[in-house]
Amino acid sequence: TRDDPEQLENFLRYFLASHTDAVVGARVLLVEDSPAQQQHLAAMLQRRGYLVDVASSVEAARELMRQHDHEVYLVDLVLLGAQSGIGLIRQLRRKAEDFVLRPVIVLTGFHDTARKNELYRLGVNDYVVKPAPDVELLARVYNLVFMRRMYQQLQERERLLQAMALTDPVTHIPNRHTYDQAGERYLERARRDGKPLSVLVVDIDHFKRVNDRHGHAFGDRILAQVAQALSQALRVNDMVARYGGEEFVALLPGCGAACAVRKAEDIRQRIEAQVRTPDGPVTVSVGIAVIEPTADERIAQAFGRADAALYQAKREGRNCVRL
Ligand code: GH3
Ligand code: MG
Ligand code: MG
Ligand code: MG
Ligand code: MG
Image 1 (cartoon, helix red, strand yellow):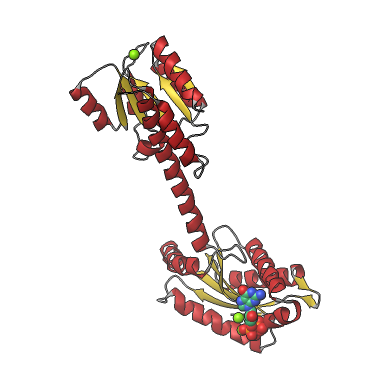
Image 2 (spheres, rainbow, N blue to C red):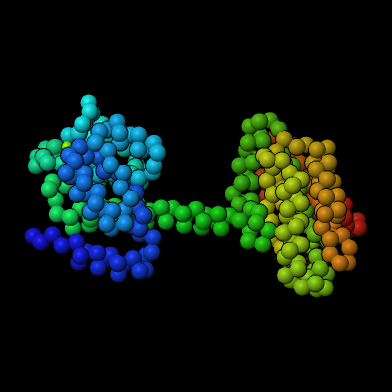
């Protein structure tokens, strides 16, 4: 077999042109006690852009692991010092995710099937008998760096999609979907705690006029400002969401009638004081429903009562609070 890394590198270079961050700058930990092997492997990896930390013992490896995050671990079995590489490998296999996030290649002189199988059972990703051709080692290291980075990108993307699915893009507060998921949970918790839960429905007054006079983009900015004022008025355990259009819903756990009216009035005044258009202050009307812990009511029914109270507030002149 020919040891020619060049072919592999050409392929990687071609591949990297469209996956720019793969491999470049990957930090690997080489745990190897033979100075000749250390020198050869470190230089070979460094030439390809890897950052290489070298340790001759498990103790030295642990020290380097405290200082840096490594993307691949190359671990020899027989090392300097009291401990063999196995102890280090066990340390690198505590959580299921370690298999992807802390990939291990065993580097060993042993050609021993039983030992090899034992290490795979421990959860190592790969097993290389020394001396291995450079091209083989490079390919194996690359596979693991690539796997790790793809996994991280996937996780990042998932976090982003999750956040996008739950957040309203105009106001950056939770959307209706989040409210629907949270509502019943809030109610159950309030009942368990033997405390009331208040539902507030907040609707901007004459919002259609704002859009008609100043445009939809301006209207969007007003929506965001109202959402911000609402968030500022609430406590950490409260939740507020954009229910739809220019209507918001807030859940206030542990808040009975007097508390809910006070909160709603605070919200109403805050928005009137903080949010304005060239025509004057923006105002909201608020409808309130209180669910007592003993009441047999679904969150959707309470929302209906709050919405009815909101209509009453609209009928009775707007810029007011009704229970
Ligand atoms: P009321 O005081 O009775 O609530 O009057 P209103 O004008 O606020 O109520 P109406 O339901 O008649 O109009 C709501 C307006 O909200 C109409 C719609 O164009 C606007 N709107 C709904 N969603 C958005 C949005 O995402 N952005 C903007 N800019 N406007 C929106
Ligand atoms: Mg050794
Ligand atoms: Mg309306
Ligand atoms: Mg309105
Ligand atoms: Mg409305």
